Length: 340
Image 1 (cartoon, helix red, strand yellow):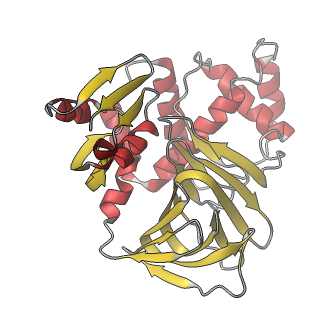
Image 2: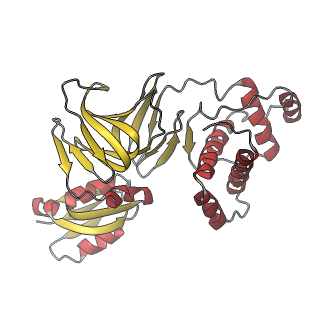
Image 3: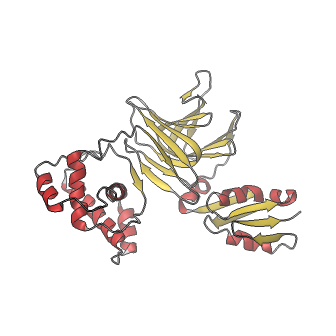
């Protein structure tokens, strides 16, 4: 991310910290102004991501409140080293713990810097995951951003000469920081996706991996463990293009890819175009603990087009209840839709 010694970086960092404190303490923060501040610059988002991750880490550092704050602040002022913000990935999660007092928060930042708690952790191989309905934004050590969708898992393995991320399940959006000396590769099943200064989405579902390019371009090849196979022909995808790879390694370029539809999950919208009800239920079940169960062969194959909110299958249920051939049974842990 570069040096943070100039006044602009310092100002943005202070603003991010102030917003975090206001949101944490519930002191009547103006959410409209906060949203506008985030939207004003990607740097604002980066700063808030880092501040949030650091805040969460510090919250467990002195649970018994045994640290002499004033003494630490005095000592730290004479031995403060600049934080290397390129050494720690940031995780955006709105803090939910009891509010830390301002003096302690400031002092603990000094402790982290002085003792090397933050930058001394080896983060070259780290697993990140999300539960049902959860989404996470990760800032990796190279500055790349990974947005994990619900029920997803990614393993990050960085080395001096390569940056590898294995998407073991689910879906993720990758916004890659360019570094010609270290290729950025995403391994998903039998596929290796190599970024060429780009933003792309990877989705694994029932053995099929779908790659969609939002910006720039990627190069795709079949995988041999975590590296492209030497005998596998590489396919280049450009912005707006999409490729599906089956479980047996068959490459299936998609015509007329709808990138807006692919990316709607970031706004927790689900867009379906003539999809089977079984597939729609499977997608809803990624976001909701109360699962949809479709019974009946014809009912599972029924085709539907529509736009829904991922966290609320109620609109879909209301639509299906209008069909006299279907019966909807709502239970504690699932919603059963029965039909022919």
